[in-house]
View 1 (tube, one colour):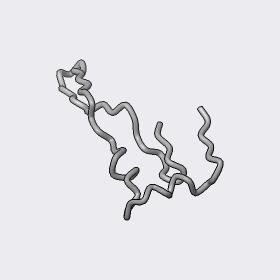
View 2 (view 1 turned 30 degrees about the vertical axis):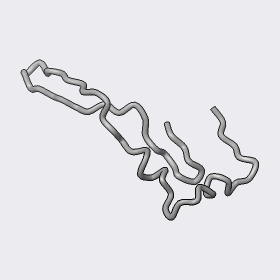
View 3 (view 1 turned 90 degrees about the vertical axis):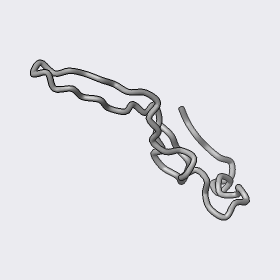
View 4 (view 1 turned 180 degrees about the vertical axis):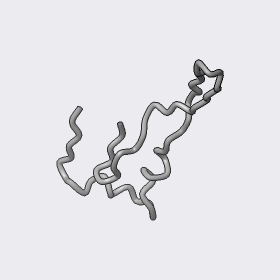
Length: 61
């Protein structure tokens, strides 16, 4: 997937005092992955589907 803007600074013209991208996209657990090792050790980990990679330009992966 490619992301391009006609005006490179277009994403900065949101009219807010601070860039909302940094606050809106954060690692949010959407599920839990659990496992048990052969030794019987339990493991529970949050699973996040997406994450912000860069804010200039705004990029999620």
